[in-house]
Length: 311
Image (cartoon, rainbow, N blue to C red; front, side, top):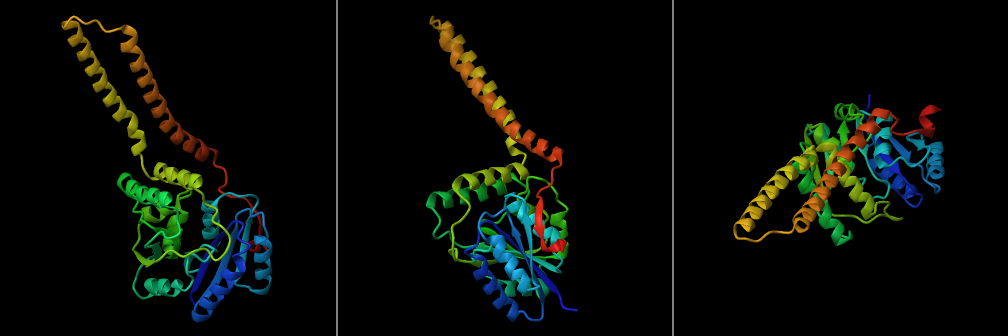
């Protein structure tokens, strides 16, 4: 019996890319004719004709399947839904914009079946076409999170990868609501091979990620895979204690030399400084409490409105 590869394709307003992606994938599938395929398009609440186009493909091609959300739940939810419904011996993730070269699947498959890897992923060797400020922050983020967490997150890593069923099941066993897949991929371990390629522009359309969304995503990743921010309060407390001791010594010295410092000038800056530190510590703690709150509510990660799996 032929082995099967499931490819999960998260989509949000990708009507300009769907058909081009499908044609590119069919060319690769034809070259890998000894392997069965299923293409799982996950429509993340698109407002354009993405779902309509995917349904048309599903009607003419049994290898195409789809899941459509009731609203936009985000790419992480789309990835999770696709992994949950994938039935292949191997499971891959790809974007529909063709920034992930489909032809690399051939080498990925060989890396698992012939070289013994559990996962073959892709990473960009450059960030050509990306705003310089965003590239700078991205590089710093990878350095920071690898120092702060126990997850091995490779700089430039894409979501584009092919995994064994065992690794896929390990990822699915982590059912947290606030998901950060790059961290999860690294945390579960398994033997991974990286393929490198230069950055490729989208085949059509525009990216749905802006600086604000990426920043929020990065902060969420740090919170999900590191407890270091919780230690900020302790560090600030030590610094504040040292500062208070220094001020106390300074006051004694001033009194010794006959200079009486103003109470208002001594107390007010200290009160403001302490207040700002307390607010900062509270903000960090509040983020973690918010995550506990969302997890405790146990809401579903996504809600399906329509799916070919139900038919």
